[in-house]
Image 1 (cartoon, rainbow, N blue to C red):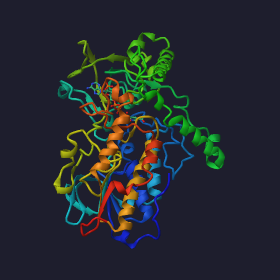
Image 2 (image 1 turned 180 degrees about the vertical axis):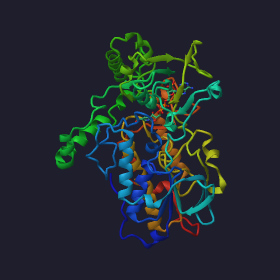
Image 3 (image 1 turned 180 degrees about the horizontal axis):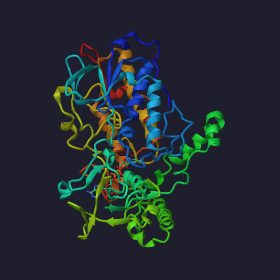
Image 4 (image 1 turned 135 degrees about the vertical axis):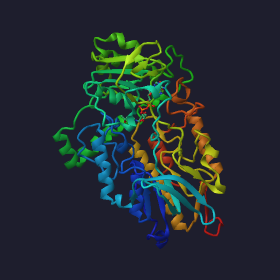
Length: 523
Ligand code: N01
């Protein structure tokens, strides 16, 4: 990806400018590195005690990425030393920290500083951010712009299961793993079989006395040949020392990861389905994926009806097979399909009324994805709250990054910017940060006090978005996913491929914005 550069010399006005970045996950780090490169003063406010965002917070057994590591890397910090084709959490976290350290980002971060509110001050076009530090003090920060980089999947969701309060064992969410609880020799329950559960199960089954998997819906798993493999020393040497090999390897990885699934996700209105599929390609994917499950289940073909999803492939996020079906074949693993669960002091009762004795329950039940910007209050022009504009969970933004009425406020991983079609969120983080830092650069170069997208630009973009979304499998297939909000609208995913989105945000279209000087007059 391109870096953002000043048009000519760095303007001295940059010295007086200030940016607050909220969050130091992969997107926050990418943004901070771009700001640092331009010499724009910034501070990063981070609620946690370290960098890394989701890769710092998620420490559950088996945690790792399911996008190829060599593509799940910043374009400015390729990492030929990845030890696995699909890296695990400790290595990813170490990589992110290294990238941040190399650019001296930690010296800009205020750790243990939890943002409570951000309010736009129309008098001087600045943002006032209030944050609570770990000693309970409220600190106030003022800056020309705020960049929210708090992540999409950062508010863990534990459903309100009946009786949960009476459960006598240990219970925790996957993203809040309690490492003081040993699972060795314990009767463990896993609720949720999405991407988190899919990694937790195979890691826990070998150490627990028993693992009971409560499954509300089966998920589609793709088998990837080198998913569990380490990168051999020879290949690492080639990647580090032979540029042509490295280019070929990255191109091949990119082609295998990026957007190849899109055609199977687009609805064919003329397709006559007998199995709920949405197109010929989608039906073919179902057949191939079902064959894969059959193979992996081996002698346990009795599990086939429970493990083949009843919805088309790609309706929910596709998983990479992490040894899931082989895990189900173990004697100490019990797969329990259940629409509802009731907790009792020593276990869980399924929807057939069967009680399962449990010592520890792990909730891999996902996140509040649609409730964006819900962890702190945001007040724009006229004191309008973002909740007044978006409601509880119906967010919209211009390219997912700026909202009319909220000048100088930018969002990373905002509405409809998640990749539904396959690709690296690190690539996406670089795309967002590029666009946003380009906006800030423009403000400084033009001497603008504020930049605000117009309602008409935002509406036009969202109109195009809705049109394309309507043809995607996640919009039409039955069944809830975190892609959708409580009304069923897809609020997380974009319908574009990562390259389409990258291309449409390469240039900041100034016709989409109102730039205003410090006198309040349009520039
Ligand atoms: O969460 P999910 P996740 N009773 O929302 C079930 C990224 N990620 O944390 O399918 C019973 O996908 C729910 O059932 P159903 C990735 O983008 C990536 O696993 O709704 N069950 C589902 O099975 C991913 O998509 C990686 O019927 C309930 C599960 O809980 C995203 O994070 C690793 C329930 C939730 O699945 C979220 O993944 C981990 C209830 N009341 C995460 N409510 C990798 O890159 C929910 N469920 C590898």
